[in-house]
Image (tube, rainbow, N blue to C red; front, top):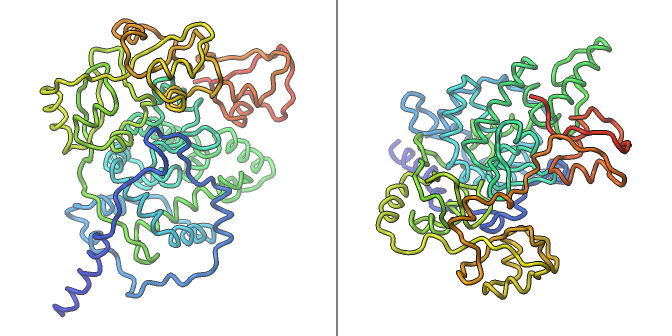
Length: 463
């Protein structure tokens, strides 16, 4: 009996030796971080060959999920508070198979989620929502705070620009609050609660979160007009939306019993991973990481809303999120630091000044200048544009006055309306204001792509 116990413990603990550290799919600046689009996902699933994924040992619940009293493990806390009715079907089985044949993907997703999951679970519980909601970012973004999609949805909750602005998530040249885990989580939960109140069930609320409340409302109205049931499984919804709840069911099943799918999910302590620290109003992102003694990547994943290597606030100070074990190091090192906190400054190009000339002036590579400032790789930068360059006091504008006061660098659209001009198309208008084409149509209740010159379109939903 003792030998059997030792064998089981060894089998459970052995995978811990091989768990890779978290890493991003792309570079530290987060350009074009992408996840599998739903159509691609479905295509890959359909191409999978049948595989025998039965575990060698009899299926058992992972040992760290057994005790429901101490709740020393966050997965157990989530598992024990599931509330949404199980809807296992062929679609959910399809996604279970997809995840089970990609253990490295699952491991990476679960490892990344440990940074944010304790906070998200806590906020979900405060609102009395089902704990399954804390798993939703796994199907939205694989818990990647710098994930983005073709529809310009970003962050772990995948807010599109217009919905993000509607829920108070600021987006400008400096930052994108849709990538701020705290702000985006609270916005997403506000939105989901509103949808649940509106539609009455969680499956319909989740469908509306994916497709938009207008799409679900119209589908319900059509069914009612025909005398048909108006539940989620009866509605004529887009393919992606019909698969949305089954995907969450699949993740829910895997978290409940990973061994059944031949997967290992490492335990996550039931305690906070991060905390806030106070920092100067202007500082390099790399300097924060240096003073906190963490990697730049770790800092980015916790503070993903910042889009530039220089981070500034118009207040006297600002706050960052850091791992708890790095917070005291940052505070101590900052108080003792004698190095410059800033290696970037703002620069206003001269009339007709070329990118190549600017890069040379500040000892930068052209590609770096373009990347840091999200410039299009053209020959000339407009003189009205203010950009970041490597620090060179002789050629740059005064950082203390301009960085605090100049707002010309903000490029987020503040307009609420657009008057259609000759040559305009819905696609061009949507692209200009960072709105998906479907969202623009839905806001204005437009079904066709034909638009009339002189007509005014709304860009934001009414509160």
